Structure formats: structure tokens, C-alpha cells
Length: 180
Image (cartoon, rainbow, N blue to C red):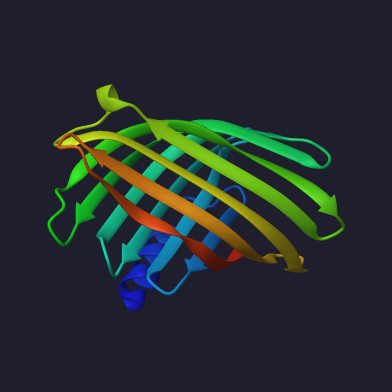
């Protein structure tokens, strides 16, 4: 499955224009691997896509846009994304449209904290889904000028109309972010 993740990210990196700065992200834990690609499409806007594979719950594909504001030590973004869940083990597939944002702060030279959250109420879901949210918090260290390593915690949850939910991810992860 890691081969599929790398192939997907490589294809996106080749197909998408890289006129502006781009980033390739990788996050791993014992049950989930996530690979993502971010690319600036304007000075204050970026496109992002992510693919996740979970041994417990299946596949997740996300894509969206966000407005970005970068300050001296702070950065802030708000945006929207479409999320497709291709579930395993008795859960139904579903699609959501979520809104949210990210915040980051450099707390020391080469060290930063960041958090993100996205939410989708029932009105923005399809199929048998009743809601969705995800949030993520991490600490990153700039190992090289174009490579950050991170340690974080992520939660991705889908609510179903029949009174149960699925936590696609709910765990600590290690990650890397390569800027090119």
C-alpha cells in the first residue's frame, strides 16, 4: 500500500504545476499511512490533496483549497475540502464537504507548533453519513532548510445516521514534510 501512496503523490507532483513552492508530506503510525501534496496556486492561496490508508478502516482521499496568511512567527489559513471515504469492515462509503483551518506558530528557532481542524455537519454529507470532523496537533523540527520532521496526534471521525461512528484515525504519528 505504501507503494500506491508514493505513486499517487509522485503523479500529483508531476501533473500539478509547481510554479510556486510545493510540499510533500508523509505521516506514519502503526495502522495508518498518509501522504499529501500542497502547492501554492497564488501568493495567498494553496491547493492540497491527501491520501490515507488505514489497515482497520480502508482508504481516505481529500482535496481542497485554503486562503493562507503568513506572518513573522504566525501562519493562519482557512479553507474547504472534499473528503471521500472508501471504507472496509462493515462501514459504508461516504463523501463530505468540510470547512476549517490551520494555525501555526514558531516557538523557537527551527521548532514550531501547529493545529488544524475541519468540520462537516449533516447538510454537507452524503450517503449514510451524518457528520465528520478531523483535528490534528503537532510539533515540528526543521532538520534541514527544506525538511521538517514532526510528532503529532490526529483524529478523523465519521458519524453515521444509524447511531454509530467510525474513528478512521485516532493516534500519535511521526511525519516528514519536504518543501521544494
